[in-house]
Image: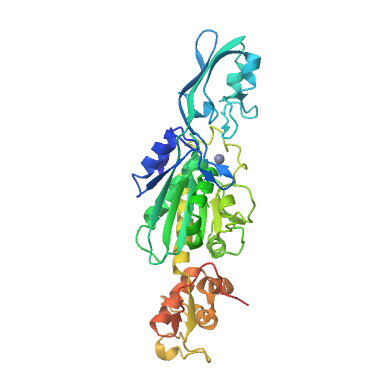
Length: 429
Ligand code: ZN
């Protein structure tokens, strides 16, 4: 994960352009990736794929001809989607195009102007304080023209057409937590899930907002196959793991994350859906209402480094990335194993003793199974409760309930019902 992050960090990305293409090319060195190019001007629901933006160089020079703000030093210095500009401006004229963070005078802010043609520079407040010349030379050597929006898609076919969607954004320049952490964890999950599973997996590497809108517009017919989904965003900071529920609020993936986090010793939180945040906004728009949640650590906007140059390689913690990966992988494995079973001996308890499944005395040092877990699974496996329900109801962790179910299947006391549709939660009392 660290290799990917450090390689991607210097690249100047935006919602379109060569930086995003280069990012997708590097991701494609780690997992099989189909790269799609959607022409500028394509109508996607209420939006239009914008013109493609690229940039070579940009600077502000003082009266001595020195570059005092230089794109080559940091790609955050130029407002993303700045239109080309050359000219000499007074300091007062220039100031309306400058952005700083007075509360964090050493940090460069991150600004964009995707849908309004403008140019601008972002700089530290200290840099602004030092500007006292009457006139400055400004150059933005960028291009905004007909081109494409690029996105990457890694599809791993499973035993069924039912899909799990994992999506992350690839449109931020040198920002590490907001963008690169999500890419790194998604790539690792794609590698982890690369053998054939029950579900098919679709990993999307898309520019934020316009990317998910474009993908949904081009793939609308396929969306009913998405049984569970998650958007992975800032998952590398020191904050506690956070899961934001789907718009439905009780989707299987909501129950799965809540369960895994409840049984983990680390601090974590589950928050309700809100219609702001990342691409879950589009996946959960009312016309789709897909069961897509969002994982992060500290929610966006709630850490001062958010959208500034301080969201750098030092801000992202390896332990947080690993922990985020593990929790997501645990949830995907849970979804793979979750199923509904039917007790084959539902009239009174089956006689466990004659099957070697009854522990008459406690105190065995190496228990092969948990007696009470067997009884919970037998009692609730009436064709309406999935294993996750049983785990929740009994307060056992999912693994223990799954092991109990497997043992009962081996002893012909339990049978799975037809493939479980993750979207229609069994009716529970
Ligand atoms: Zn962002």
